[in-house]
Image (cartoon, rainbow, N blue to C red; front, side, top):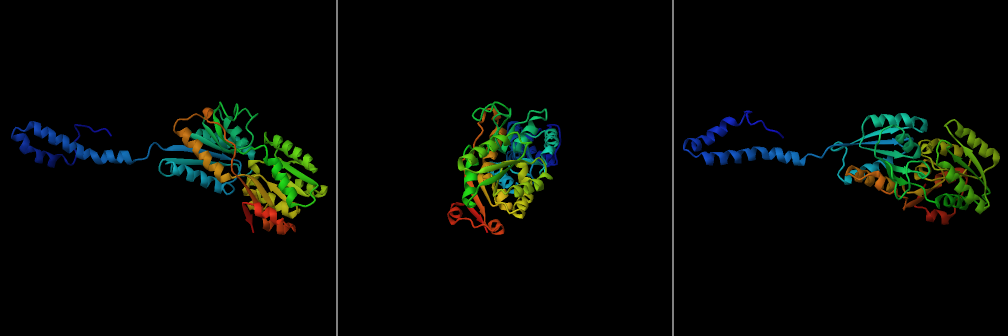
Length: 355
């Protein structure tokens, strides 16, 4: 706070009155001391306010191809984790959101909008969002709320040493694809043929498809692979599954599918196809099961990355982390609708059963 020494305040009169006996009696030194003390008293409230005021407000952008409803639990966990570390909305934090609403073709435009806002950190959901953010032409520190396989995308040099402008959480774990198929096989007795639905616009979907196909071969299960690039193709994909007589569905990881979770779940029930996904949001929406990283735990950890960057760390120096906490959900309401009895042994292993 800068004070003009020549500016008169509304307190100047009384101050002069109180000091005048000292000045008139030759107490110049004492008068100077009193004036200094008085100035300190006047400045104290201002200094206290300055110290209590939050630091410079920061701006975070969030980019996802899903919907705000689909990611509500993740965003709540993310915001709470930021607040626990001193970054609170309405005080020293502002968050701008951009949602693809299940249409990943919109991501480039939405990423450009966030770049124009000069956000301090960009938080992305899914590899497609990360790639869209990298194409804005602006260098913005970027954190994956959760992304799939990042290696081979050009976004990071390695998980241990990203080397670029992006870090955060990856949902990929080499064992999860086979684990999902094994759980589905345990739930559906006599499972001989499954379908895989994946997004051909997602550059990292193919490795997971291949891993799942390899797991199917080891279990003696046939595979029907179906690429679904837009919303209109879901109905045709499920009709093709029913025609081929598939007995189960493995949904390959894709952030866009989270935004269409209710539609996918409804089609699975309509065509009486037990399905498993990689994230809890889809089991809650009505798929039979989900197995994968705990999205809330990953969102909290992503907040830690954001705070470290806001405090000066560089994404290039922060290793990308793989999930350590997994959760298994079983939707017994869906099982009933499918006429399927989920073995009790499987129910007992579930972290959550939906009834």
